[in-house]
Image (cartoon, rainbow, N blue to C red):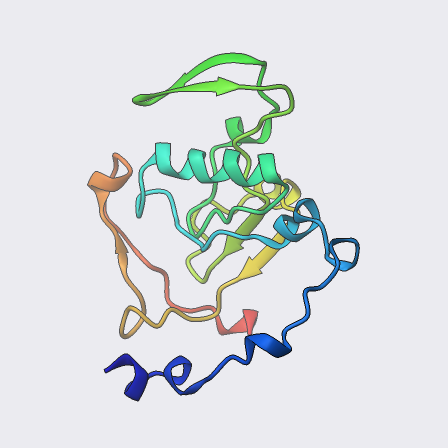
Length: 161
């Protein structure tokens, strides 16, 4: 059924006409991975451990992780000492130059966690103008997700647009 409903099922490859591209003409993997980015995932939508894992992995390959809405713990901006580092339920094997810092900082209408320090530690800013998954004015950050009171998203600030 895939052959009938998917575009790839309608294509035929003429392998006899394919000529391999010489490796010296191909961009090296170390350059390709610099364009790799994670999707925006705010702390609370995923665990702290998952957030740190994405950040450290992307930093190690030269890619970029995205904080998502909600800011980032300033402790993550500093370079870590090599050795074992314990955070939450995870023990990390830190190598020289590792950091948990996300290179992409997201700013959304609620501006949760947005500070001058947060913005200054960005390699790239992502300004979120809309969120398709939530109807109306937006959602709510439940208190149990961050240890405080429920926080409804602020009304959109159309001045940003």
